[in-house]
Amino acid sequence: MGRLTGKVALITGAASGQGAMEAWLFAKEGAKVVTTDLQLELLTTVVSEINSEFGNVAIGFPHNVAEENDWSNIVQQAVEKFGTIDILINNAGITGKPLALEDFNIDEWNKVMNVNALGNVLGIKHVVPVMKKAGKGSIVNISSLAGINGLGGIGAYAASKGATRTLTKGAARDLGPDHIRVNSIHPGYIETPMISNFTSNEEIKNQITLGIPLGYIGKPEDVAHAALFLASDEARFITGEELIIDGGQSIKE
Image (tube, rainbow, N blue to C red):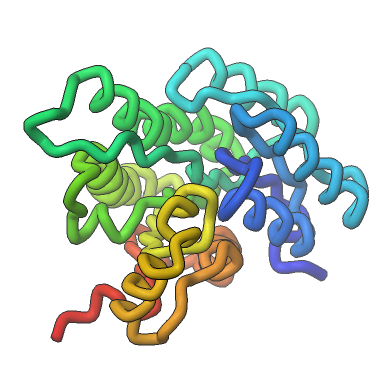
């Protein structure tokens, strides 16, 4: 019996990287998986591979997480297909353009905030009624180490991830009486397409690695296993927490 047997998980940004690994791992552990992304070709491949290995346990939808109608339609179809939603992984995110603050423009700010922060709010809004009906649920918001320490050069990204961090804590307070847990994960450098412009350069990659006490950059499965734990009943008394996964990068001297 898997750690998520009998549960239904909705995972955004599941076409690649952390989201794809979360979808695969959750299916392996017995969950039915609802995957969403705007990268439809990649998402279709992820769903096909999961179903080929674990049976017909995964479905996929095109999804702009900043669009409320998308959320409403996907949640409705997920419930029609699998009966409920026990787990929400708000994984979708973008970094935005690297710009100095004096060069920043409102359109870029709104684009990043709408995906990374508003998208999480909308996900919670539309999934929570389903979880309340079931009497329990687990929400995991994928934030970032930048949401705790800040990050120069991509201010909107850091701000959006900081918003995700505090949204998580407020939601945990609000939803605790409904037995809905809400936690956040804060990855450091993880080998995903999002940071490939850094890790594809050996010199930059080596510089990054030097700042990580464990001596290597994380993999998507490092985040996926943490999400699995928080989503599972093993974490039934954990809510409002922020789990840093950074190989020790944030340890202060």
